[in-house]
Length: 203
Image (cartoon, rainbow, N blue to C red):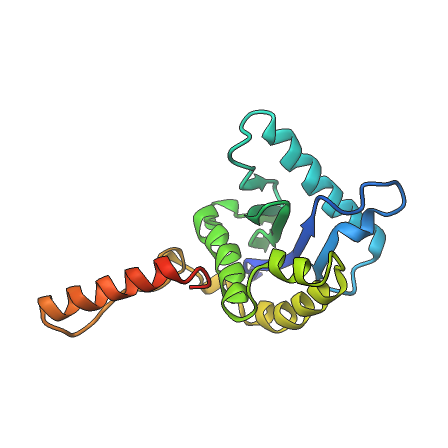
């Protein structure tokens, strides 16, 4: 009997703001975006609530740095705070192998640094085209509707293009810088790029 296997895959991806939905019965207001969208609202709130609880708990040990990952046998959870009060969470399914002995989970095949890089790149890609979450929220007078619509429009197209099973060290460093130039010209261009990045927050 041949063994069946599943690859690393995206289970959930969501963005929330901890400043919203403070009152009982209004918890769903803090959810800015959730993928996949067909998940029941009760499940969305449960997952977001659990993530918020984990983040707040870890803050008791270090207020400067939030929890980055949580491991379980079947899943991995990754947390990233790109802006004040905003959190991005990605949950992935651990690869499995099924044989006559049963199903085994291969968590050792999941690299935290790579998955965290995927979350951060998703934010940087959004910011490059649409600016920060906070800027849109501020420009709309605190109304979350425009932000939710823009997040949905962007991430619904972006997330399906991510092939987690093919992500590697190249995603951590966001590619390799290579310019077929002489040393002096390369240094001039590198200095220009560094200056541009320093002066342009969106890059």
